Length: 123
Image 1 (spheres, one colour):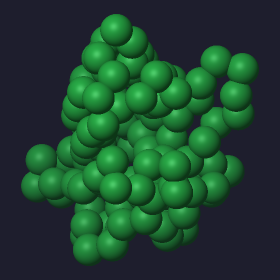
Image 2 (cartoon, rainbow, N blue to C red; image 1 turned 180 degrees about the horizontal axis):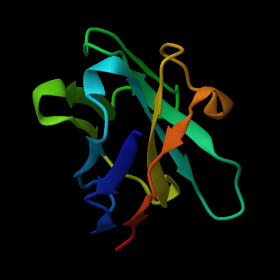
Image 3 (spheres, rainbow, N blue to C red; image 1 turned 135 degrees about the vertical axis):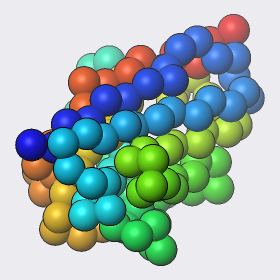
């Protein structure tokens, strides 16, 4: 079975940058579209962006376009989320997830989830 583990979260200053990693095991990452999601305190889970199976297509939520980038390295079974120009409102637990449906920001279409990693944007 596919398993996902996020890493790279931590404390970063406003305006700073951070890269999160999503390492897969059990199945090859090349078979799955990977989405990144986040959940802030008191908020519902929100789609951040997604990358297609071969990394040829991406999509992003309007709130992060121009600031965040998603890509994957199938040879290393790892997907990434690069966050720049971070704002306090980006503070959340970030999750990666896998689906074979296609590129989507709808959480219910993802079948496998990581445990989450906390990103705190604060001075």
